[in-house]
Image (cartoon, rainbow, N blue to C red):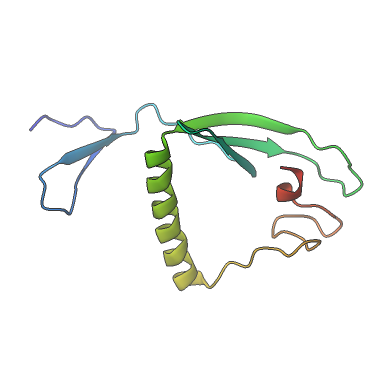
Length: 122
């Protein structure tokens, strides 16, 4: 087996196969996003991530600064869906259920005077 660099992490799959996966995070970056949108075609699923900075409730037009676009095959998107479902299930079993806001209610990170949600603008 090859020697791993300082930023590589090796994990062996728990299945019967002997596939060794190395996660190389040398070029990874972390980006904050408070807006996400999804689009797709038959061949690909596109995830758009961005940030809005509308802090006042009377704002009628919101500009979202798109930062990242991730393009997945439908199979990779399906696997991502399964993984996110498992992570959220574990989160809710540990911290309690996440309640999505009903129409007109504030989101958890919105100021008390805000009258809209990010999902209303997508």
